[in-house]
Amino acid sequence: MNFFLLPSNNLNQLLKNFSKGAKIFYPFSENGKSHIIEYNPEHNFEPDFSKIRTAQNIKNFFFPARGIVARFPAKIELRSNPIVLMGVKNCDLRGIEVYDRVFLKWQPVDHIYKERRDNIIIISADCPEPHDTCFCNFVGLKPYPEGISDLNITVVKSGYLFEVFSEKGQNLIDENKGLFIEAESESINERNNLRKSAIEKLENINKKRIKEKVYELVEKADKRTIREARDECVECFSCLHCCPTCYCFLLSDYKKGDDIERVRVWDACYYAAYARVGGGANPRSRIDERFWNRFQCKFNYFYQYEKFFACSGCGRCFVGCSAKIDIREILNKI
Image 1 (cartoon, rainbow, N blue to C red):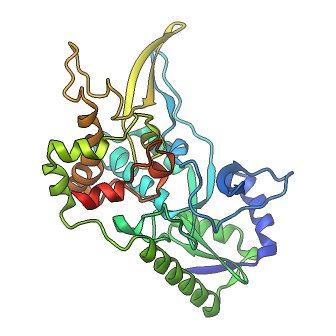
Image 2 (tube, helix red, strand yellow; image 1 turned 180 degrees about the vertical axis):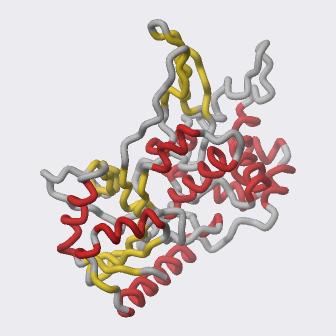
């Protein structure tokens, strides 16, 4: 393991150094919630790395809600600005893991996503105080990262304990070596105890685990089960737009001046027209079918492809749901 300790009074200088070459975004607490805001060296820097994931997910940094992906006859220029994302929780890293599979591993490679991904440095943070809405352990995750990000922060009494996960992360440490000191075993032991406590809290929140071979149960669910599961859904679509792992999109062409632009926008499988094809046929014309497609996608299809669930247990879907539909309850019942 590769640990470094940043004394608390060196954090501001570290951020100033980062900001010379990149925009920085970090979690900021307001009215009991954590939000992503941009770092401004002229303003007070008061990050909150201890709260659970931010209210909004980080999907837009990698996969914008709307973006031009092609232009004809002119070409688009693949150029994104360097960004440092700080305080990202493990549940949001699952979203990055899903996007990396979909846009980089699956063919063809999405070069627009790759450009953005290569220009974003991710500094994750432990999640020591999970809420009742959190269920990362239900889907097999832990309340702290073990990879995907470039660096990870654990807030300890003596400062910020950094763990290096990638070459990009090591380069950042090397470029700011004078701000760090050697991490002693006392800080690492403190981190281990904080993590143990976070896991115990999650164990109390989610006493059950997702069922073995849940993908088979989702596949075989009958119409009555599906109807009961979606009965209170009012189709507000909040669960899909706040999800850090949803990756569906829609392409449309528009004329702009002498050019034609191809625009990519987020799509959502609850939309009535989601599965509509040429001629007007729609294999998922009923909300029951669209509702269950979300479960099929996250807990059956994606698992069959990649052997992990396209669900992070972040709990945003439950928090945002108008009817407070809980994925955990549905999966426990089938």
